[in-house]
Each structure stands twice: as structure tokens, then as C-alpha cells.
Length: 529
Image 1 (cartoon, rainbow, N blue to C red):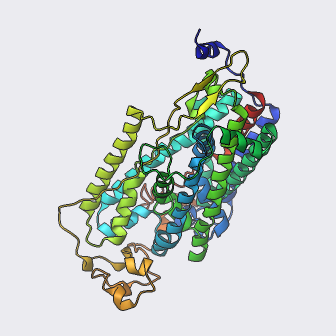
Image 2: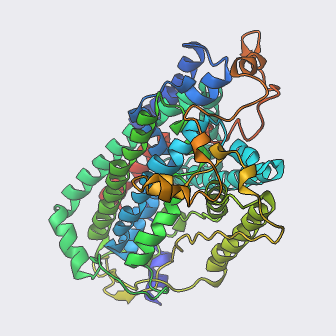
Image 3: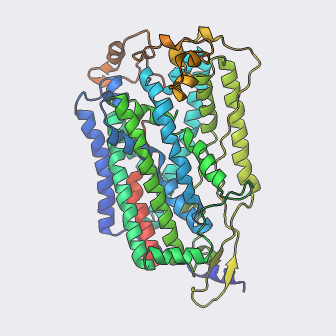
């Protein structure tokens, strides 16, 4: 009998199950999340106006917004996928944090202030004003919805499989329950409820990660022991400048490539802009993104350490080689960023290229989306072997002594490409309202003499831009707010609120309330498998 067949005939490892107090804690987490929604539905203005419901009355401070943005972009895919990547492929992936933290800087100092001054509710209304086209606004909203639906599917599925592993609760039921709770507090409490629920869930997530690391360190004999075992297997690697694109992780893919992966979420994503614009002032808004830099560093580093402890614990008895841990969704979760790339392209074109018209932006976005989808789908169809082939052992497993050199399942890194081309002529710069454009020289080289900067303005008079300018509508904000009130309730038929303005971004499906379940899995795996 083949060795692997032998292990596959063994009974699967008996999973840990929730005990009474586990269910109590899990229920409390869900109840608190729902309670926050109820509180903000009854407190203050009771979510009667568009400004309060969608923009939190522009009254938020930097710290809660920072934690909310962090929670929006770090979910089960990070908590489960990063430790798995370190376990299978080594520590090189940790370098991605240095590329990731560059994105909030661009958001805080370039795109964020630009949209904050325009006082937009939806970033896609800017596209309509800039290009004078509803078609480009609709395309941007559709791409955002595609990306959001794909992202929500992964964010919900990951913790639901984890919940299934420790409770036996059906995966589909977990998705439904968590989705209902998220929709409940979002619908009742608006953006304020979303932000403060994110704060609560982020704190739970960080405490759970620390608990896992402490338990892991105790089980394997400390971080020094874990580091030594990883080093002996060749997994400790940080400086690989190989330009070969077939190498799984190098400096170029992790620093340069990862910067572009994170560029969309922290610059023009509806979730970020909506939270950024909900702050009291521009200074608070900038600070909220800058605080994400240490936050990203801490989360990615903690997840990487968890991967090291996983390897140290399973160094001589790998459950994958045994065939006793077979669910790849619990080992690695990939996220497809194909829809984010063309969106970044549209906004960069809109802000910095005064000659671009809506047809060029529309065609470029479609081509960019098709190209990135082709790359991502091709990665799964062809299954290229871009792995490090590190040794994994089952020498410490009972009865059989053998070592396999295996090629592991790969998780293809997102490749984001944006393209724009139009042969339909160009927009005349003097026809564009200056407040819808950003000057290269004013943004990146403000210290240059004005005479030098003006020569690069491409015929646009940026002196006409008033810091108080915002996107204007036919009706005032007060008139819009009236449309939202029907006997003190929010009307679903308010004329001035389109589907993309009531953005799915406020329906925050970042299911951190299940983090306690995920952490329980990691602890139970370390102690019982």
C-alpha cells in the first residue's frame, strides 16, 4: 500500500467542538454587533437625513475611522491565508507589508484630500461630473459591485468554513446568519453603526490573534524554537531580487507589485472614500489613513508569526501529507483583484489627464477588466507551478517514517493592469471645471516656482479652484434630506439617491465577529490535532 494511501484510510482528525461557553461568547459578539445598530438607529438624529445615514454627519474622529478602514480590508482571507502562505512557502511573503503600507500614504496625501474637498457621497458621481457621462458612472459602479460581491463571498465563506470545522454548523447557514446580522446593524444604524461595529470587531480580532500566538509559543517552545525549525527547512528568506517572474516571491513582486494591489483600496475605493469623508476635518481624515500604516504592519506581522508557529508544530508530522487535512479553503484563500485595476485607471485618467474623454475611459476600463480577468482565470486553469518546493515531513507521525518533497498548491498573486485607449478625439482642457482635476506640479512638486508649475497646467487655470468648492447639485442638502423623511423614516424612494450612492460599501460584510471562531480553530489545532 502507498504511504499516502495508508494515511488517507485513517479516520480524519476529530475536530474540536464548541462547548457551552464558546457558544455564549460567540452569541455575545453577534448580539453586541446588532446592538450597536439598534443604538445608532435610536440615538442622535435617528438616521433621518442622508448626511447622517451615509456620511455619519461628518462627525467622526481619526481613530475609529482608521480601525474601520482597517477592518474593511483585512478579513478572514488575511487571517487564514497569510499563516498558510508562511507555513507552505516561507517568510518571504512578510516583505509584502512594506509595499502595502505605501498605499495609505498616496490615499492620505493625494486622492483622499481631493475627494474630501468635493464632499462626494459616492466616488462615481465624480466620474459623471468629470466626464459628463452617466455611462462611465454606471460602469464604475458596476465594476465596484462586481469586486464587492466577489470579495464578500470570500469574506463570508472563509469564517463560515472555520465555524463549520469547530461546531458542525452548515457552511451555508453560517453565511446566512452572519449576512443577516451585518445587514441588520447596517440598515438600522447607517455608517456610524458600521464604523463602531468595525472598531469592536477589530479589537476582538487583534486580541484573538495575540491569544493564538501566545498559545502557539507555549506549545512549540517559544519563537526562537519556531525560528530555528523554519531556518533549518530553508523557509527563512527575505532578500530575493531575482527578476524571473516565475519565482513565487521576490522583492519586485512583493514590494512593487503589492503596492499596486493595495493602491485601489486605499485611494479610490468607495468604502475608503466614504469613511474618509465622514471625519470632522481634513486633518482627521488624513490621520485616519496614516494610522493604517502601523495597523497593517501589526496585522500582517502577527499573521506571519502564526504561520511560523504552525510550521514549528507540524514540522515532523504534516497533516496535508497525511491526507488528514484536505480542505484547501482552510489552508489558503485567494482574492481576485481584477475589477480594482480598471477602476484605478479610470480615476487616474480622470484626475490627471484633461484631454481624456468618457469614451476613452469606458473602453480602457472594459479592456483592462477583460485583460486582468484573463490573467487571473488563466492562473487557475493552467495551474502554473510557481512554488518553492520546501520539504515537509511526516517522520514524527505514528507508524510510518518517510519524507516527501511536494509541490504545494499555489495562490497566484494578483496582477493589476489598467489600460486606456481611445481614437475618438480628446477633451479640450479649457472645457473642464478645474475642481475636477489634479495638477501634477501642485500635487507632487508644490515647492517649484509658480511660473514653472503653470507651464505644466495643460491649459487649466487651477487658480480658479476654491478650497470650499464641492460637487454641486440642483437641490441643496437640506432639500435632499427632506426627501429622506416620511413620518420620521428613511424613504427608499428618495429621488436623489441612486443605487451606487447607497453603496454596498456601507453594508460592511467584513465578518470579524467570527474571528473568535477562527482563533478557536487555530488554538484547537495546536493542542488537539
